[in-house]
Length: 387
Image 1 (cartoon, rainbow, N blue to C red):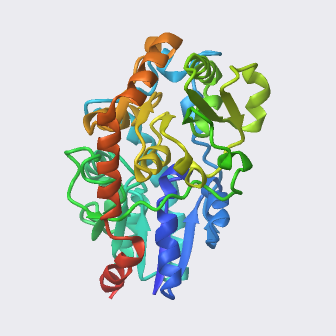
Image 2: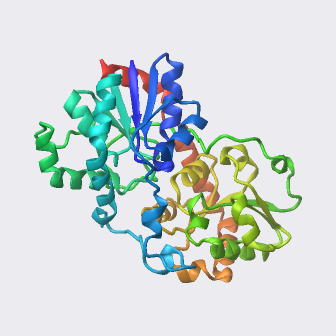
Image 3: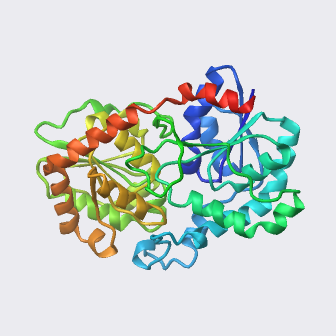
């Protein structure tokens, strides 16, 4: 069969489709990734073929709009979303759909897929599937408080576009796949089919330092993804480095893009600043993870059974932090004042490492994820959907 993978133009939204794409290819099916240039590099790096649709989107631009120089979004109250107020965030994907759907329709008519797989906020996939009578599978990217409210908003507000396309309403997905284990997912998320999270954090080489076990110290990975430093986040990175430097029994491995390392300045002797590398290559050498609440960081740390300290900064990362705390897997500092205070970061990190309850909860979550069916096990289900 032919499977079209679609995604909103954010690599984090797309990444969990990659192991599923591999599984479909290994089973002998044709897979094509359709998306804007923002995700093409990620797809090519994973060995998947692409069709470029539309222009660059640049998810960083709406996040930096109106952001004062030197301030992080959390410091000025931007993009903090909680308690179900998702319409303002999701409107951008509604507008995005209006511009993109005709181009996706043209591609689908030409390539003739038997099945479409897309993240919940790529509303174009549901429209293309409805018009062409192709089953659509939604695939969440992790803890997802936004996808189903987004579709409800789209169903309420897309009437004119739906009518123009000959649709009575927003088509529903034939299946929802979820790589997030149920205990970590938001309780209000609609029912779904679990799909084991297979870490894909990009391609790269095994770092030489990973084999160097820190004698008498516990290793803590600090990873803030690609956006944090770009969103004026270097002061936060310095704060975490200072906090970790005060813990003599800890080695902090801090991943940071090379272009920002020169601006970081000197760090304590027990802090190792390294270029980003796929987390799955070295998290087995770590005892805990400090991160920003990104889907990839959260699920990869969970798959390795590691306690987590979450320092959220934008949109759904605050909900991720809440869920990490609720499962007992870790702790969170979700206010600018606490994140900017090295003493409070140090205390949270100390508590994370010294509380055996976090280790137990993290191991339980790891085992829950390992029991979920792999993408390969779900291929026959997708074949049946596609007829």
